[in-house]
Amino acid sequence: MPRNNRDRALLAVTVTILVFMVLAAAMGGWPRSGAAAGNNQILQQAVFAYYERMPDHIYKIPEADLKKLVDAGDQSIYILDIREAKDFAAGHIAGAHNIPFKEVGRNLDKLPRDKTIIVYCYTGQTGGQTTAALNIAGFKARSLNGGMNNGWMKAGYPVVK
Ligand SMILES: O=S(=O)([O-])[S-]
Image 1 (tube, rainbow, N blue to C red):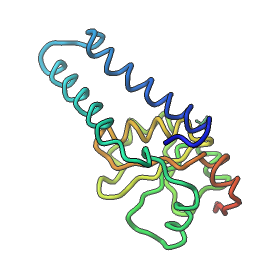
Image 2 (cartoon, helix red, strand yellow):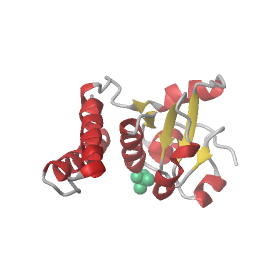
Image 3 (spheres, rainbow, N blue to C red):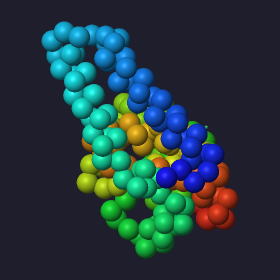
């Protein structure tokens, strides 16, 4: 369950985007013939499945839990930093890979399907959006609580360059 206003805002943004996608498809906002109609149906099913299978952690990971995984060198996770490249270069979580937010869609082939992708941005907003999209696309993804600024850095955890 959302723990605070930031969590609620993140969840609201995610829900709004997904509801818009479903409504647009249902109202004919997208092409309805042939393969496109089939794709719409597949997308709707994926969105419904996303909500039906919503886990208690709502695809978020607390910063302390990620710290433990990083410290343990856990190989079951893939840390995805979606901030701008210059900010990644200035300091990122050890082992993270950088694909800026707007470039994630065209780089899905670089993401692993056999690991849990831990996404982080600056404050958690775009990280939450990316996490929802990845889960709907069939990846296993979770969003770092509070992102880099309000989560990881606020907790005083280290970054590497
Ligand atoms: O990346 S952000 O959502 O925190 S602005």
